[in-house]
Image 1 (tube, rainbow, N blue to C red):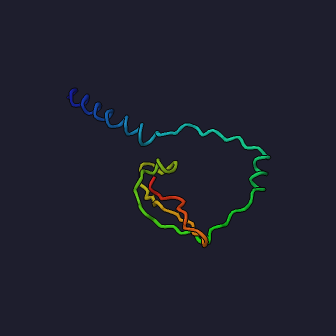
Image 2: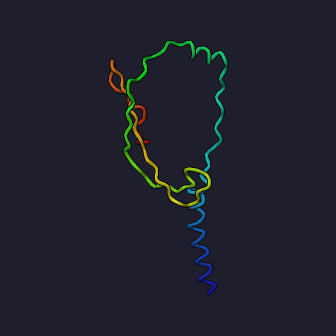
Image 3: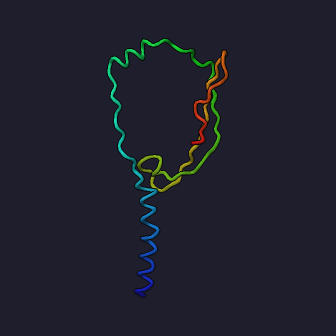
Length: 104
């Protein structure tokens, strides 16, 4: 009986520790703020305007199921469906520009 208990505890540790490490506590390092001055903001505001797109098109290219704790805090281990979109900005005088292919 003791051997069975040790085997079960070892299996739980072998599976549980990596699961916790990779799926539940996969925290990223803290983001550092980028220094921005008022002069930089004013120069961006005074820069010449570019042509705005005439149309913006989007398309859902994929869906995937992901554990809730990897998306937001609080839903637990319940799986949530995520949709992946690709965006394209269309201009009259030029070819369209792909903003995000959604494949990253």
